[in-house]
Structures are given as C-alpha cells and as structure tokens.
Length: 341
Image (tube, rainbow, N blue to C red; front, side):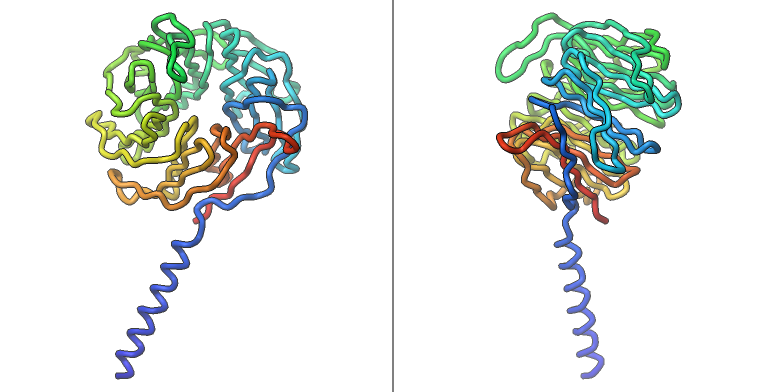
C-alpha cells in the first residue's frame, strides 16, 4: 500500500509539473520602446546584435529609426526616405541597406555615421531585403503587379529579386511573375522561396543559377509573410484569406498542414531553438508549437493593437519585437517580448 501511495503521489506531482509548464507563456511582455516623432505605419526591421541596435523602417514617416537596445531609446533618425519598407544591417562591413518602395531605390549607409554611401535604383516597390550568407550578397524584392485589399494597386506584370554585392553593385536578377513579397533563402542549399500573392503561389528559384525551378500553388490567398525551417524541410506561408498557416514540405512542394491563425498577418517567424512559429496579425500574436514537422498547435494568443502586424524575431537575443503605430494619447512604440523555454 505504501508503495502504491508513493507511486500515486509521484504521478500527481508530475501532472502538476506538466500543467504548470503548459501554463507558462511562450511570450512574456517586457517594457516597450517608446518612439518620438514617428507617425503612421511602420514596416520591417533589422538588428545589430553585437552593437545592440535595432533598425526600424517607418513607412509613412519616411524615416528609419535607430534604437539602442541597451537603453531602449531612439538614438538616431535617417530622414527623407521614400516609403522605406525593408532593412538589413551587415555586421561584417558595418553597412545598413534600406529598400524604399516609393522610388524603388536601395540606399546603403555607413552603420556608424549613417552617411549615404551608395544608391541603387531598381523599380517601384523595393520591399523585403535578405542576406545570402553563402554568396555574401544582398537580395531585394521589387516591382511587379500588386493586388491588395481586393483590387490591383499597381499593374505592371512581373517583378524580380535583385542580387547586390556588399558595395551595392548589381550582380544578377531573378524574375518573378508578379510582385515578390516575403522570401526566404536556404543556408545549407542555394534555393530561395518567394511568396507571389498575385499568382497565389510560392515560386522556387536557384539563387546560384538565377533561374526559377518550380511554382507551388498555395491553397489560400494573399500569401504575404514566410519563414523557413530548413532542418525539417518545412516552409511556413501566412495567408490572409482565409487566415491560415500553410505548411509546405520543401522536398515535395506539397502542403502538409494548414491550421487557422490570426487574420491579416504581415510577418511570421520560426524559432528553431524552441520549435515555435510566431505569427503577427490583426489584434494578436499567435504562437504555434511544432509537435512534429506536419503538426502545429496554437499554445498562446497575445492581444495587440489591431494594426500591429510587422516585427522582428532575433534568435540571438531570444526576443520578438513588434511595431506599434501612434494611437491617440499613445505614441508610436515597439513592443518587446521575451521568448520563454
């Protein structure tokens, strides 16, 4: 009897421990970063991990805001940017690349003085910026037809990915069938996966060869954000209509999962260390736990302002940042969340 009671007690303690672990939130809010003189919609961000700086594009404000993460304060503003959308900071060269949608330029700045070093003119809607670690290149999506909010906001056929070296020299161009939204590059391989919402598909290209290899149809529409789990060969695509997280097997090009999620997403991220997907959308951040490569369970829904949809996950810091625009008495800010174990 004593052994039986001890066994039952052990099971009870284990169950309580599991329940407590399940109740631990995946994201825990920290003090927000207050911004001054920033109005309207903000877009994507980049980070200087070693220097503890965050770079935030302020689309409507026509600025890029530099934030010191040690003090959580704005320390510099780069003005006169024509609808800045994407940014990438290169720690090796201490250069900051900013893609501006209004005039289709990519501007390269010194990362210390913020002096303009180079200006590359592409086409309208220069958008997302990524770093190709294998080739040590910058890749920028731009141009092409764009369908948004039920109508064509810009006609014009195909878009492209532009490959630049770290001096701003144009090296190659990979055509897409319409405007490229988010795209993700393999680190082990040479493939790049591109969301092309006007065609309701993911276009797969070989960055080394500069050619498109495949067109994968997406089961939902308005597929804007994207993240990659290269280790498990999974690609995460966020759709707005209906609001679904389409999970692709990158070895077959087939969708293996499509859980419902927050509406109107514009950014999502994969946390490889914890097997989680963070989806930023209209009014919430959804957190999905990867049970296995084909199955995902939502474990947390964090309330946010309705139009807060862009951000940045920084694995090295274990933090998720989300842009919040000015509302009434509340000024613009960047909300900060710590990712828990």
